[in-house]
Amino acid sequence: MSEKVFDIISSGKILVSDGAWGTMLQASGLKNGECPESWNLLYPEKVGTIARSYYEAGADIIETNSFGGSSVKLRHYGLQDKTIEINKRAAEISKEYAGKETLIFGSVGPTGKFLITGDIEESEMFDAFAAQAAGLAQGGVDLILLETFYDMMEAQIAVNAIKSVCDTEIICSFTYDSKPDGSFKTMMGNSIEDTLGFMRTNSLRIAAANCGNGFRQYRDFAEVFHEFSKDIPLMIQANAGLPLIKDGKLFYPETPDFIEEILMEFINHGVKIIGGCCGTNPAHIRKIKQKVIEYQGH
Ligand SMILES: [Zn+2]
Image (cartoon, rainbow, N blue to C red; front, side, top):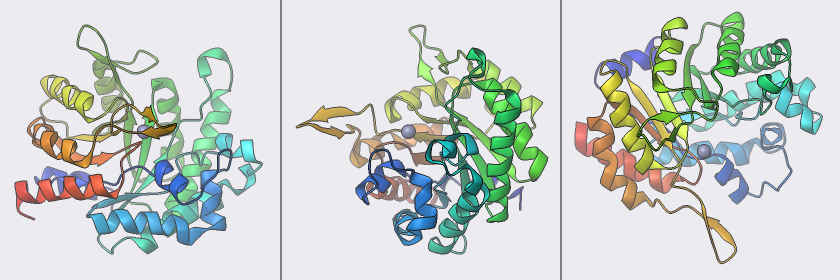
């Protein structure tokens, strides 16, 4: 099971993952200040409908509604004692509403606390990620996806915690910004070289980047990453551009048509798993899937 994702992309197949969950949950009625992951217990059918919509758009990979499902995050809502249950349900819901062949990636986001400021102890962080991973593994995820990470120290604790409770394959996806010299770094200053070292240390086989400033920028990231390493498969889940305000409402400028135009450049730079982050929806995923089918014939 744990070799599955790496084996599939190593055989040359491009996989399409899903798009935003937060944006879709808000569209389903999630209110400001409400815990997105509480919906796994309260409204599983609404959560499942999102999974289903991405599956119907052609996604080979569906994530779980568990980005903020660490006990550190759930504590804001008094739900920390339900960490395992919430994450287990997240996995079960995505499995139930996706297809039989769909790969389920358990989403794990950062705690939002900073080790460097002493905001949180390493042991608390470790326990939070271990409980979350245990819940996701119990729910049957195929892989655990750490995403939107920006601090390699936190990512290291998360990887250690996950490995302490299950042997599920792990992808760690960082959020990078482009620098004036053309390099890319995370908010805490971690570079692509740092990422490659981190992957070697932890025997991670798939590199990944998500969120950030959109597909245009991550197209450049893929090109730079590809120069560092032609062998390591890359997963990209970009935002639909940086959000803008129009008529008092947030909107994302990169449309499904725009993404369709630049998609081949991703594939040409070694991207093996392509999906969306904030601001993307099933229409984006449908376009990505169409383009991938045109490219590889199935
Ligand atoms: Zn995002």
